[in-house]
Image 1: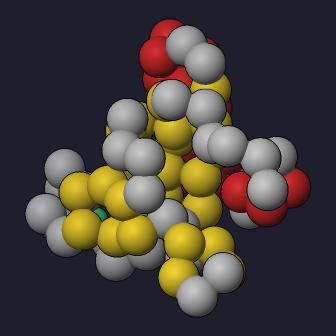
Image 2 (image 1 turned 135 degrees about the vertical axis):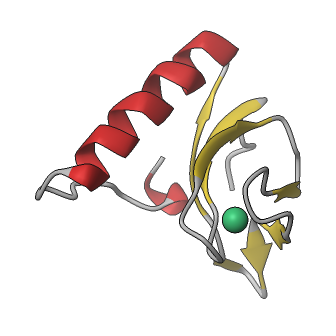
Length: 81
Ligand SMILES: [Zn+2]
């Protein structure tokens, strides 16, 4: 399994909030305050995409939000990275 890059664009499984995190195994949602592990029993629990640069992750977040707001959802889960 590939190591996840340091910056991740993540989608909170509780509230659907999209944000950037530096967490390695989990993150705490800024919107609902809940903590989610990225993986659970070898399955991806959180939709995420990793980046080497924080800027890239932020750009992706913007794009992701825009995509979710629209009708196309071409997002692939973390395992496809
Ligand atoms: Zn949340």
